Amino acid sequence: MEEVIRRRLRNAWPLPDIMVIDGGEGQVNRVQQVLNELGVKIPIIGIAKGFDRKQDRLVYDVANADLRRVAEGWKEVLQKARDEAHRFAGSYHRLLRSKASGIPRKKKTK
Image (cartoon, rainbow, N blue to C red; front, side, top):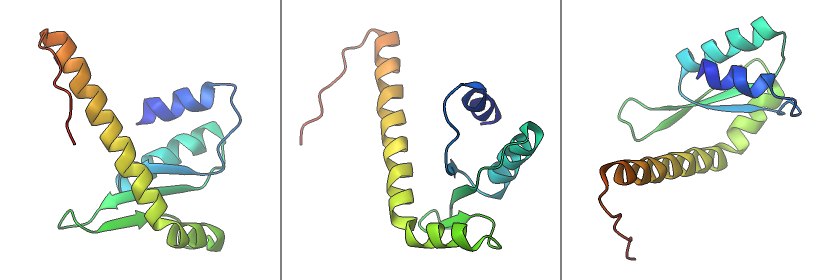
């Protein structure tokens, strides 16, 4: 994750308004350390799986009222974005594996 954050911030693109991290306190803290090292101030929200893997928990600076409002008001949207990223990454990984193995990929039927 650290490498991805460093690459993103090295790019000449505009800085994001917020970073949403797939992970809990450990991941959010590490990203915050990288941002601090680089002198970049971007609010971070982490989405961590709950204890029973069924309840998501948002990790963010609760002292920041604006960030709290975003986290609480947009929790469902943030979860759906994270879930879609997982779905996309899984699909892409399966595609790469099937190409590497030479086995034709099965089409999904609905």
